[in-house]
Length: 317
Image 1: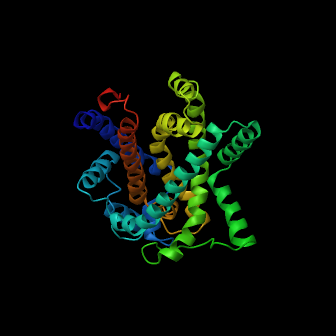
Image 2 (image 1 turned 120 degrees about the vertical axis):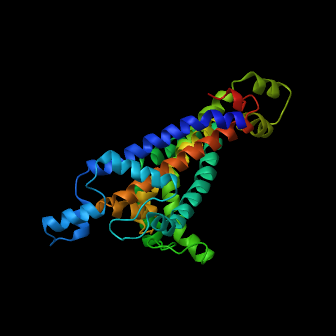
Image 3 (image 1 turned 45 degrees about the vertical axis):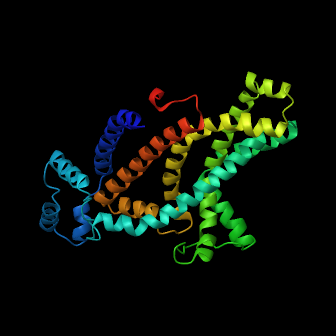
């Protein structure tokens, strides 16, 4: 385990450094002047220049980047240009909402994805396979924002089963909080669940042709035992490989879904910060998202080695 982590650590650090450079450069390529936004619409050129100097934006970009990165290493993401609050405090205020959404979506993604994949991969009826294939295709082709709008229309307006706007923290009131969480989590999870189902389905169909499965059939093992013990266990490895990436995509999709359902999470913060040219907040959000994705990928590779005894951490490249 230690050897694996030591081998992976340099590449993970390089990814984070490259991400920090992109996070710093890309917002500045979008145009606009945060100093003008801070100074106000009636500010003079001299006042804007003074604000730019106060914010340190008159220094060379390399110097600005080095100063920001040094602060990040110390856990200081800077101060928001617009609100004047520490960026870490803004992230902390919104983090809980997005984590609740991402965790709920991850649970739904795994449950729905595994169920669809196993059903499609083990079904022997052509019509059932065709129906499940069509379901996965539709879910994959439908973007999260459209899925969210359709769910809000059907379950929030037509049948009025669940609320479609706002949020209540699960920590404050779990019973009400889950009602506000179900629709956005389902909208976020369905496309990713379909992708996972396709991987499991393909892996299961391949596994059914392997010799160890044919041997189990010849020994008279029941179809259920063959599916669960032999086929499914080896097929889940493919899904687990992509699980880290799927979870990372959930964080990206949360930006759109939070806007559709008016949730006050990191996605809403990213949209408002990008619109107001609040560079430090955008930089912190990008770096945070990639850091989480890198961590999840490491955990996924570790989980893969535990799930499939044929794979050893020392052998992962």
